[in-house]
Image 1: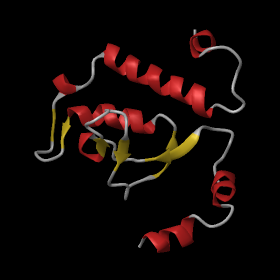
Image 2: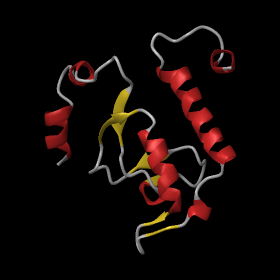
Image 3: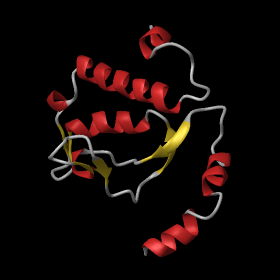
Length: 123
């Protein structure tokens, strides 16, 4: 199965090919589309290595879709199909996650990368 995946999606020049399919006038990224606690695995030893599983719903979305979906999933019990508003992240928690998300984007993916620090750029 891995060989079939490699031959289909990881052909020579695949990064350039798939990048060319993404409209650059908006920030569209490959999203997980089912980002909830059961689909995020973190290594117990160092709490840094992370793996996303259950990617069958992945697709192209605006950059912040997975964050918004994650906030929603915090309050949703998919087993009993109930929504617990008291479990929705507090404003401070949402702001913290969004700031970290934007900082990683700024430092690792913004092209061309602006000069200065994240705090200077976003203040």
